[in-house]
Amino acid sequence: MEPVKLIECPRDAWQGLPEMIPTEFKAEYLKELVLAGFKHIDAVSFVSPKHVKQMADSEEVMKLLNASLPAGTQAPEIIGIVVNEKGLERALAAPGVTTIGYPYSISAHFRRANANMSRSESRALVETLRKETAAAGRDLVIYISMAFGNPYEEPWGPELIEETLEWLKNIRVKTVSLADTAGNAAPELVGSVFARVKDFVAGIELGVHLHSRPEDMEAKVLTAYAAGCRRFDSALTGLGGCPFAGDHLVGNLDTTSVLAALRSAGGDPGIDPSRLATILQMTNEIRTKYANAPLPS
Image (cartoon, rainbow, N blue to C red; front, side, top):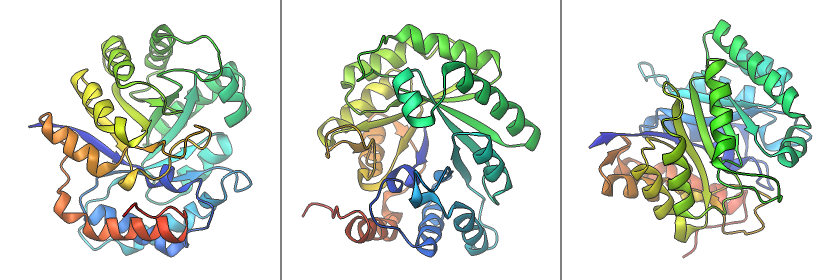
């Protein structure tokens, strides 16, 4: 079995939910993820509460999580997403946040809608993030949005990914995740794009953050794995995903499905499915109480 890095993404699962999840419940959920064996968690974001009210309590969530972990528990990697320098300041001050994440879009339309930045402004911010995280002893992951297609009728192609990776390597970014932001890329496209760009710049840990309809999830995971991907983002029950996909069935990759697919292909994410009962029960509680989307019977 070959080791695979699995990043659990409750932040992406929760950020668009219509009802506020209590702060204490969020912290307890993250603790249960750690106790279940998850070592890499995309947990919080530091953005304007006017735009993402669900994440307004990120600092308090992290304080409660740190206080609740049993003595001797191995501290997990905690990713905090930022979209500007103010968010970076908050993330660096938050206890337990080990990695800063930033969504860099190769789509001008999405970049302007999501962060109200030009290409040069966004690249300048990434360079600031790289310098500030290095100085603070934190890690940095850059997500390349629209890496597997563009729904806005803008120019798109793998060469845009290659050029972006070249730039990121030149400024010494070491971890990048390619995002199927709208979730409408065919599995074959996911595999072909990853295979083309994976060796373009040696020294970067390259992963995928995919969104998908349920029937395509396994195929997307397997084609990415076959193309050489060994870093996957997912969320239990597939909750969340892209709010503008235009299809309510498009969500994050379901973690249990990802685990099964990777094991069938010889990958070992290091998570024991038998330890997930408690956290799956909590996930369904979130779906029922705060997402109005209970699991299908």
